[in-house]
View 1 (cartoon, helix red, strand yellow):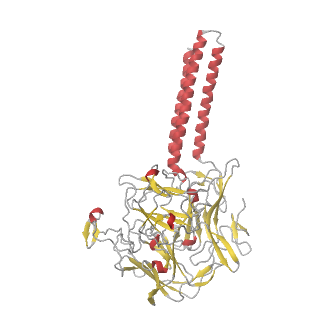
View 2: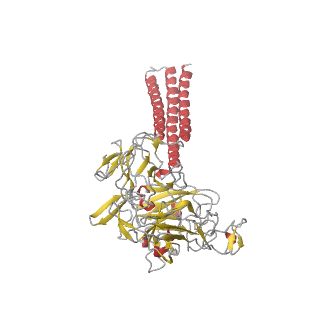
Length: 636
């Protein structure tokens, strides 16, 4: 009878171990997909003070299995004592053997449960977190993501597709922007010995310094990828063949090594926390045949309006566009985008076009210096008391060449490949106008189809022109607006708790902002007072709250923005900036910073740097956690 009691006791131990294992897997599988929240303090410091629920679950499982392991070891010791004190009694020896045998079996089950549970939990963590890549919705994929920390905090400012972005079309291009010029000869094979830039006929080097590959298939990285740049800062890479598969979604990794060099010969990652960059994204099973559009209400100055001469001309697209066609000097891109004086349309304004906001926003600054702002930075003005027109040109559509390969656009009609509904094949063969990252020509009239550059759609008089070239006009006054922008709200606010490890940090300004100033890093301004450094938007100084933990690498981060209509009158009047970042570490303190290098769309710098609960002034030009301060750094 005692034997059966002991056996029942051991069987109970076995059953409990198995139940703990299955409960661990079940709980993890359900809870890991829930929102992961921690305490966060925002302002200049964001404290993440609560423990990740996933870690709590793992600790509970570890403690429970450990407790069962102690019981099993205790039974083994008890069996040994019973055997040693049996005094030759066959019954006691048999009882000790049975207890020992069943205790060892229970211990093996416990250890196996722990090993299997650990393996599955780690797999769930990797699948859900994307291994540390930017993951705003909790979705994830494969790939290492180990070098993503250099994004934003070091020499790489932005990339496309975004880290951990999903539903990326198969015909996408890959874009990356460096903070300073790099030596294009370390990126592409130059087919023109006299060229200083990678152009559309060049391919990237195939020695592995740049790799684009399916996750876990690094050895089979893509070799045939065209590379192009016009400034040696922003590069666009276009694979010769479509990525992914027509039947399934596939995760890809982009890898950049330290063989890529700056113009001075140093590695681009010389001063970074890692000597490489990698990130991953998911390619869908679809192709992108949707042409890009100028967002309705996404232009500034507004059509027909009168504006200060220090206005920045801004165009917002509904998706990322090819930066090669819309960035550079006015002379470089005059065939694709330009600003003309209506009184003399044969001449275009001199200046520079800049792409920002993850390649969705284009801005123009003239080269006519007309003063300085409150930070001592030069301000450039449009011609006073003038009527100006902004002109964008759509790319020419491909003719009826190989229509049978462009399904469903396999019907030749009116010299264009069309589908059964009469829509033209939008993907161009030659980049001679504005296109998106899948090389679809601009849909200027927002008709959800591509017609090419035949006529202009005029935003001032929408009913008059229905072509895919795009234009609008506005007037300038003789004066300038010099008021500084103010931060109205931040989310999460400083002192709040229960915020997400992955959600973006949101900053709402009281004015429309200059998109190209909403960047990471800093800007150096040289004037009569000397050289002054002005910070932009940054995450800085990761510091563990638990001193026993090593300091963690900053997560990769980059800046996005949107303009909002706060008055519900159809006119955007404020800008919301987002710091999009990788997964924050547990029990780590971060700082978020918005500096005076940020400007509104009238080129006024963010100084004094006023924010919620804090009105800065000349004597105390900064705010730290809602308190005025003289310096530009918050204390630890």
